[in-house]
Image (cartoon, rainbow, N blue to C red):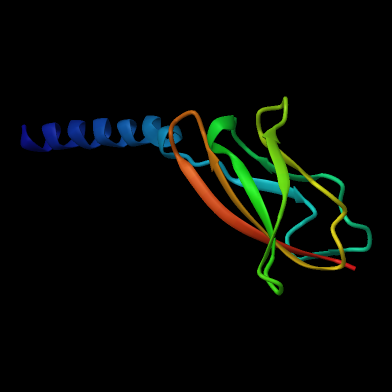
Length: 122
């Protein structure tokens, strides 16, 4: 009898873990433009970060800096109509140099993620 109960409990436990899987998922950055560690010849007019899940616009954004100069780059960000892409438009053309994008994103399930990317112009 104990073995039967143990087996049933094991099956129920396994099934609950399988069905709970999506609740523990986090949005993942799937692509960016410019790509991480890319060197682009022309300064991007728009920077985009695309994720695999829908984002909450109020908590999803990025900042751009020039680490060598300790300088923040003014960028206006928003979540695109697809709901999965954060787009940012620099206030002016980016000069040659190295840049760091620091992003934060939140999904409807309340999970917040952060990360960073680097790219160069020139």
